[in-house]
Amino acid sequence: MSCPVKYTDPQDGEVFDQESGMLYSEYLMLDKILKAQRMVSEEKNRPVHDEHLFIITHQAYELWFKQIIFELDSVRDLFSVMLEETQTLEILKRLNRIVLILKVLVDQVMILETMTPLDFMEFRGYLRPASGFQSLQFRLIENKLGVKQELRVKYNQRYTVVFGSDNEAMKLIENSEKEPSLCDIVEKWLEKTPGLESNGFDFWGKYQRAVEGLLNEQHTSALRETTTNRRNNSLSDWENQKKVYESIFNSKVHDALVSRGERRFSHKAFQGAIMVTLYRDEPRFSQPHQILTLLTDIDSLITKWRYNHVLMVQRMIGSFQLGTGGSSGYQYLRSTLSDRYKVFVDLFNLSTFLIPRSSIPPLTQDMKHHLCLNWNTQSHTNGETTTE
Ligand code: HEM
Image: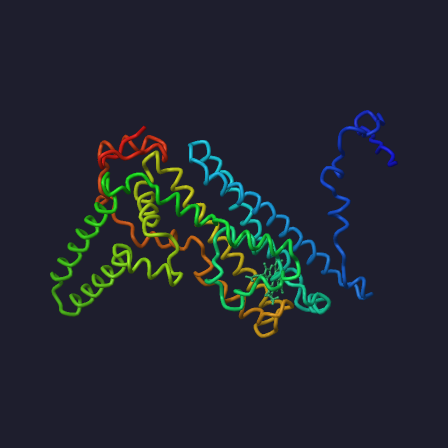
């Protein structure tokens, strides 16, 4: 039988048994966490001071990864149920929390960079084959956000082999690949953007006509150029613009980009994202617009982390040494900086399709009224969008 812990109150010195409540270290299980730094260099009788920092840094990352997963799972649940104002606020709060944690993670790389490559070399050999490549939580974050297996670089497409003998890890990975990612859920949510109904406000039809008007103006002013050189340049700009817009107006071109991994959202969701962005000043679209901004921030910060990590790796082991996990090291990591790992790449590219405020199709009275109500309270009768 274990003896009850004695607790001395620092104010009055009173000593009492800690039978019912919990002490700080108990609650946080510090006995486990603070004893979890096993320095291999010490065990090999060649202690290297900086190995302690190396371990603590990785552990701190893994703890924050855990918190990110906790928030991500909850945000996906909140998105899946009906979006009411209070839920949108909660989503915003939690996404913002993920963004702030990621900022810390990006900056944290600097602390480990105080270790010199020479110090690292002294214990790196003991680590093999351990590597961040085997970080289960990092893969879960990628999958839960929506990094797609087929869009990973070739070497990374076989990332699950490292978990092969760990059934529990394999199960978690499989689930994270199968269940709807945050990207899938956001896509479904955007598809429901009020105002997209072709038999209602018909945003897409109106937007397309506005863009055609702008392109016609551009064409007319290109033809008015006084020198052949300038006219040709302006006409070629106009041709390029037309092609860029063709990629969103022609659903076949859009779908081809999706199948190549250059776009992620469905055509409808893409329209929703453009609509939310253009009408973000409308009260009803303000929070959705903030959500889109935070999702872009998340992608942007993960890319920044990848970049900082790659730079650190190059500094520590150079460009040509293999990683302890068996990859080509720096070269492999550099290839993960591509847009194929950006889940919300479409949100980054929205700015290509913004039009001047003066050309944004004005809202109808019905639509103005509609945007004062909840996202999911719309229904359609006889082609008219009404509210319940
Ligand atoms: C001296 C510091 C570090 C070095 C030299 C280093 C090196 C590497 C290398 C070479 C790889 C490629 C896989 C391999 O073949 O091993 C890798 C992957 C990875 N490392 Fe690090 N790493 C360092 C610090 C960290 C830290 C602090 C974290 C935080 C958790 C981390 C997380 C990861 C992750 C998640 C991957 C997989 C990335 C991907 O596949 O996209 N690494 N690391």
